[in-house]
Image (tube, rainbow, N blue to C red; front, top):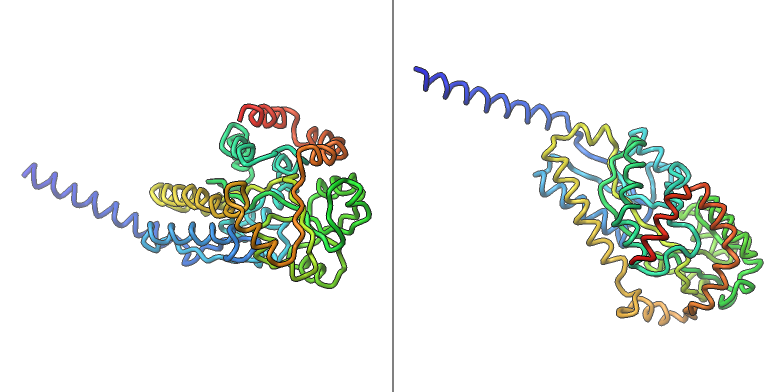
Length: 341
């Protein structure tokens, strides 16, 4: 009798757990909106595809993610993306630290001019104490940060002439992203920086409304900017743009712990794979993308350390001003971690 009661209790518990799982699954949305700025052919977009596919497969379709490129959920205004995630307009995103910096001032760290000279410097920040601190800050703002990705070093292109020294950039009208730090940096260099969304940038370059822009090489090549008069390209690694995989906190809390684990692990895997894709063809050991760009009649100028130092000296006051706004302790930690790399 006792055994029968035990078996009955076990069966009831199993049924209750099963019913709970069904109820939780029933509470899931039929589709989760994942926002990115660019299309899915770019490394950034490929990271989104990898993440969404892994999650769909590993949750047996319980979490179905649809990618919305071009920040279409906020009418193309990428600087509004982070606010929309917090408000629940967007469920998930792989976002640019630059685009989110107006709402999270500490993310301006990666846009301090000439802070990170090479890829190990980026890794020292995103994969170390600085990255953990930034994730803690984001966690207090209504999102759950899961993993790092990478948009890459932002290089300078223009339609006028090769840029080798600060004086070469004077007077140029350059499209920059919607961050005051970029206005300050290019103003210090004597340029005429103009903020506009990426959706507006390409027609502006094609019409000659602006002379140039700054973006990672994957964006430059993927958007075929050499076809809109951007025939001069300068490699100077002046800032980089790490990406962050996040989920809206309420959406995150609506999932079971098991599904949360799946989404987190999928983000970490997708982030690692996306970084590999983002760095293909643009390193000293693999310059295939650079060769491809040169094949389109582009003059590529690679600045020497001495030439880069000349730009760094001109922009040092901008660095110092923004280091105080970002947080002196965070910047010091970043500099120390880079020095130890």
